[in-house]
Image (tube, rainbow, N blue to C red; front, side):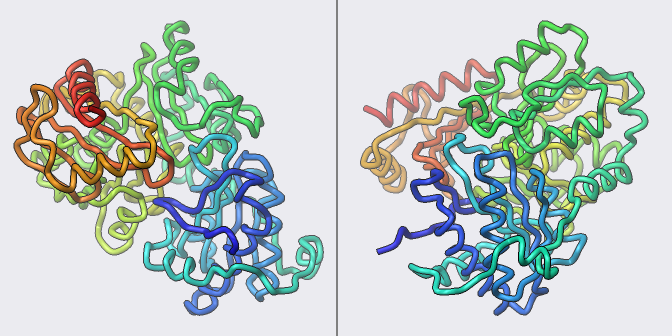
Length: 467
């Protein structure tokens, strides 16, 4: 029996050459083509790939299958970010977009993300329909990629310039380029490297070279993966802020002038303050289950509606497409805002924060202090525990059964189970346990008044669940 292709929280991802093969890419592409034809949507797809190994080869294999089914392909023959594919899909009114990427996963992986015609993740119900179409074998004939280019079924599109023009229309780039701010960018060898250099040529750049192996590092913009960038900012002494994005540039990481990491919880709060309090925009704030409860507190302060979703940006996107949403965001660095596509975009979010700094003349720390005056100071920390599958399942079962009444000295006052298990511990503190949907790990999150206290909760939780 053929390998079973299953989509996780954001696309299908597997290790290159083991399960992520040209043949399996063709299988999932044919299923996507059948879904697109049945859906009645425009029979055009936008296809892009990031900096991972084999990106162009897998893109060409994808295009050959779509073209064989009478679906016209708009492709980039140079690496692009996921938001570029989503923007092109929406702008050009294509039926769907495909990104050959494994996002933030280790370099041995590649993947297949499906974007809907509105320029955001395909809905869970459509992804299920595509999965249902996946066959063990492809019994189709197709011509070569070059043949489809020659007959017009494959068209080359400059997605990067389309994105660049969209940024120029949407931001005060003149102020950001004025020299008032010294900025730094770490592409993590990912797909954001060319566009940020094009937008802000005077910034300081790190890991902005083509390196499909990402120098052996998973391109996830979290502090433990960005030590070199943090040290560079700290040692420079004159950099106001640093931005990092992941492999396909849809996730954001941020640093202040001293090289301190500013997580997504704080970024979402800064965005609420800037977009609503400073720019006068309104709308619902939609955040995933693992985000800080301070978001609810700030929304209440400003009179904004807040909604919590399961983890996975596709759930946020579904609401953004239907409702008036100001901000949609995840703890993991995926954030979208009104005025752009309903899609995570690390570069875009970084530009919003930098525009906030440039317009107000304030540092990141000063802007965060403004928020702290309303919601209080806090920190959210996370452990990723690599466990045997049997132990992971045992812990999840214990959570379901209400086994955990306390974690060390922290008594459980109440529990939520929207997606995973969040145990409220009093005094605005909580710990959350959830198995990853894309990696063989158990994620444990904790919120408290400061980082030290959050780690104390994590350590107590780890000791309890592993006992």
